[in-house]
Image 1 (cartoon, one colour):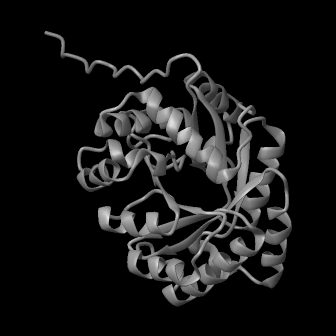
Image 2 (image 1 turned 120 degrees about the horizontal axis):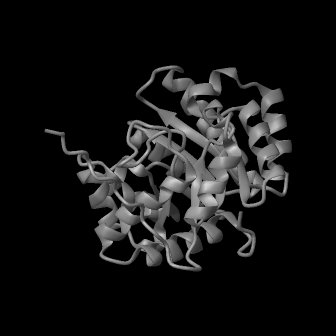
Length: 278
């Protein structure tokens, strides 16, 4: 007697003309080193026409800008992740400022605080977060914020630095609906990762239900946090479709409507050219 095999879950499908933006991916990482061109081809075939690739230190910020120069439909963000701020000095900040002037750079980040890994003392994370918030405002760029189990501290720093004329986004949102309301009050967007597709993601699904669609973005955070049914495998921009489909299900709207509105949101926040698709 043969065992029943699990049926493959068909991927969500956008109708002709509907497109998505993966607003947060790390395309320079080694996980994409062998097949980046195929990854980008799959994204285009799935209707993910634009990707923002994110810097986490000076070297990856350089790489993000280079990728954005090389590939149509890719844009860059530059900045230093809280895990890497111990490596940053004045020379690094000078280079980040220079990189941020590149026309393919559409945001500053990811920056913030992380209370989980403990790679860098929180006091040092806090100092560099404040410094990078100021720099992003000086540069007139939207801010991409990393916040992992440091909700109160991150929110306090953002509130003391407000207002943010260029706006911002709380990437890979991991708080509750009350935090989401505070983030929206700053004029920021809430970005939804593939975690929303997990069976144990009730709190994030409640956030998605509570936040207006015109304040949501979708992202992969690739190569991390692949959505179901890819959980545990490498994430890539094409998989943002599964995240958008879950947002659609939670909000009771069509996938195309989620694509239309989140794409409009990304264009508004990051100043993306409407016509440039990968």
